[in-house]
Amino acid sequence: MKKVISVRFKENGKSYYFDPAGADIKTGEYVIVETARGIECGEVVQGVREIADAAVPKALKPITRMADSVDIRRMRQNREDEKRAYRTCQECIARHGLEMKLVEAEYTLDRSKIMFYFTADGRVDFRELVKDLAGIFHTRIELRQIGVRDESKMIGGLGICGQPFCCSRFLKDFQPVSIKMAKEQGLSLNPTKISGACGRLMCCLAYEESAYEYLNSIMPMVGSTVRTPDGLGTVLEVNPVSGYLRVRCGTESLSPRYYKVGMCEYISGGKRAPRRPDPDDDYSGVRNPAPVVASSDDGEKRCAGGGCARKRAAEKE
Image: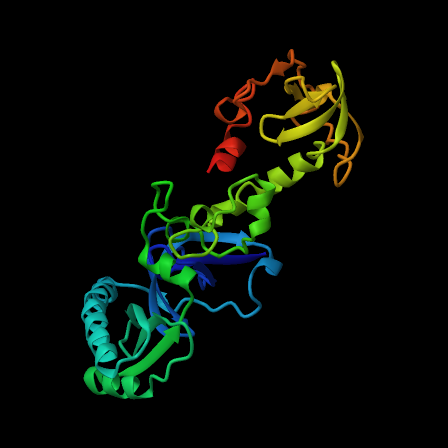
């Protein structure tokens, strides 16, 4: 076990482990540490605690010292100067006619270096830009190209749900998101509906993916033949959240009905057979309500028990 503290350098940035060097450091205090970017002043988001050796880097850097009022005042002054540096860099980019979008400017604590983050579609020759900036600021200049997801994390904003971006609010690392997740959850595949402000697939698609994968694996797929209390039928729709199947029994003239998955026995068909559910999940003691006859306008009604709403809304869109 090692004693560590978690330090964050930006308001919504990733936290890093440092060695407290025997000091009793509490959450909310500021420390001076040496990073790959230089000397930094960071906020302690988690005080001294012990974690396993395997969970921390082998070469854990110790803190340099506790930050005093002068360090905190200098850090806040740097934040103000970064705004002016941002505007100056934008003017230089426009003057050189470079196809790049400036995202953020950042000073190190000792002002030995200033970093400019930008996005661009391809490679940019910014050598002349660096010369101009070095002549203006008289310090080391570093330009770093980032992706559009990192840009959204830095700038922030509101998503289509009305909440602040997850990446700028609490997500520390970006997880891979694929279109398969939207298919698994029965969502609309319209890119405008499942993409965030950054233009990439929304991070929240990954939140419920493991639950949908499990629920879909234990339910018959569309096209499967199942035995219901009313006889054999074909599955027309599956709602994994409510646990209901929309099944047409007998001839095509009969209206389809909704059955709880526990009332149906898989016979054949579909791309795969459902696997046996875990004994301690919600389907182990499911009640068997009476089947519900679907109306002629299936797209405007929900299943009994509040199911199928999410998937139908996606289909309607």
